[in-house]
Length: 94
Image 1: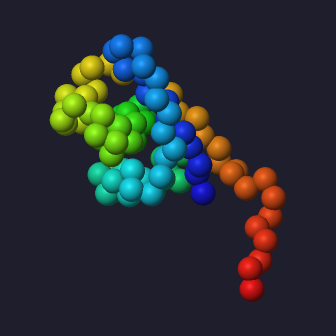
Image 2: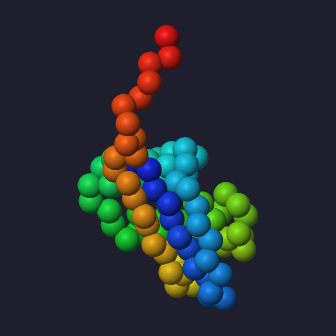
């Protein structure tokens, strides 16, 4: 499973970091019709920007803008991904 953080820097040079979580991932999969694993193998800039927008929107920091309007503001967005988030084997619970 992909584990990732998205760093968004706005026009005022304020940087915020978001963990990529379920609701934003589901919104991505619904919008683009592809799994997050497919995204990890071949990321498009639009996909990265959409995930960033979803994270920002879910914290109500998007100023009421649509995705297309928000993209026009030229935020700086960086994706930091870890395709192997489990350094150890999971421990059985039963």
